[in-house]
Length: 324
Image (cartoon, rainbow, N blue to C red):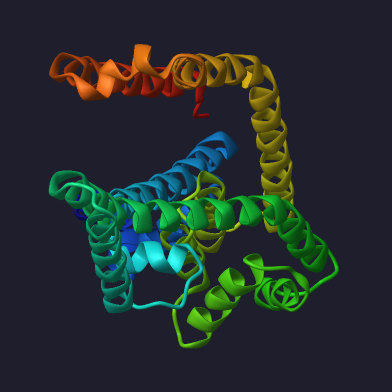
């Protein structure tokens, strides 16, 4: 009886010891946690899921860059006079421009009075010369400089691409453009190099090119550099595609101009026909047409014709100018 009791107790102890060894020992010794850690380190994540996470991260970075650029573009829509002067490539200050405009307006107001023109026409001429003419000249210089920039930008991007493929860093490739490119590419890229040299990130320095040169092509260049600096990628391939896009846009613009030349010629003929006919009638029969500026009804008719002709010319200009 004692032997049977001893055998049962021994078997029970062995059973409890085995259960404790199997279930309690891994928990107390930390072996189970180590096994879980090894499994987590050796477990392979599906390739599709990893690729999806990488693509999602890259897409989020691209979207954040585009949002920043759009916000900067909205702020740049309301341009100050000083900014427009810089964009036109002039070294004037805002005060010098305002003083020059006032002097021109005063001259155009006083000169007609000395000739004997009435006060109202002299005032209109002075206002148009003081406010309209300087801004028109400024806008003309700005567009001319932007055209030169667009003509040279694809070549500058190609220089950067060749430099990167040859092993040069992006910053050194920009310096090559500064050394070899014509104006205004040279001055604009010099501003990028100088801005980056004082500590500003290169992506942000390239994005500021759009503030000095508000063109879609300059915005494209800033977007490519900003996205590459944030999310990485093959910069030479991206800039090569950008160069192709810039050249295709240039070809498309030339094609649009060629296709719209007929409409522009027709608009020019229609706009110039009434003044030309008026001058011919005045040469052949001055008394017949002089009623338009000697009689009160004729003056009213002349003013109405000028207003309607101006509206028609503006409508035709809007119809034949294409933005893309």
